[in-house]
Amino acid sequence: FGLIPLFSLPLLRAGISVQTALAYRFTIAALALWCLLRLRGERFALRGIDVCKLAGLSVCYMLAVLFFFESFGHLPSGIAATIQFLYPVMVMLIMIVVFHERFYWRIGVAVVLAAAGVGLLSAGGPQTGAAAVSVTGVCLALLAGLTNGCYMIGIQIARIPNISGLVMTFYVMAFGAAISVGDGLARGSLQWIGTVPEAASAVLLALVTAVFSNLTLILAIKRIGSTLTSVLGVMEPLTAVSVGVLVFGEPFTAPLAGGVALIAGAVLLVMLGSRRRDRGASAGADATA
Image 1 (cartoon, rainbow, N blue to C red):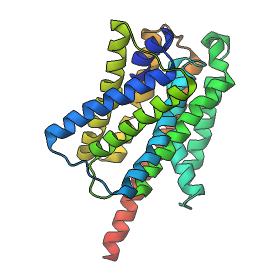
Image 2: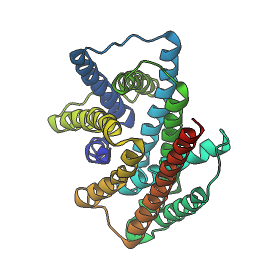
Image 3: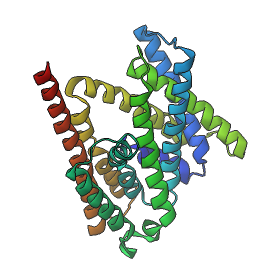
Image 4: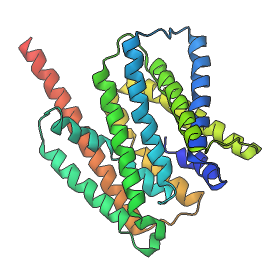
């Protein structure tokens, strides 16, 4: 997931619209997943209500990626990726406010760390470039994290039975393709990709950051659990920052390093706290039984 800037920025800098980049990403990913699922012999049939739920989830996912891509025009890619990585903290806050989950001290500390991290990234000063202090960019990256968090919560509460993670991903990508194409047509911003480097970037953007990343995510969750998988997901912003610095020449400064560290710490605190609560709930259930 952290390689999204590596394949998307060359397209955007070549004048390809965000809507076009997303249309190619979702369409190629959906076709690749369809072929993979056919080879695996998986079933695609769903109830009408489940199709509607997946369509709603796709809107959240589509908005998350759209805001993320749009933020690249206002922020260095590493900073944008780090800010949007706050979605686990946002998920926990939504669960507390909307679904009345218990508030723990770790959540309060995580929120403080996250706010400090965003503030450090936003106020990095001229050393990080003029784009680094863009309020618009920070808001877009935060919206990307928020909508991604809503997508995660939606998966949890949708309760779609008898569907594998890959089939769900296929439907999300297919709906995302339809939404992005419709959005591009409505804005008149759809374009044909006409050069080999642009086509290669579009294919890699789809296969690496949509198909391969989701497939390995599902395999990881099955083998080591969702919490540890999420903790290892801290590599996502670190990868994006590395790509920005090494490939695109984005500056690496003390405020950037500090902001990444604070946000990564906030996410780790939330994830590890969730793991302990899950263990406590499991132990309580065993004792009751």
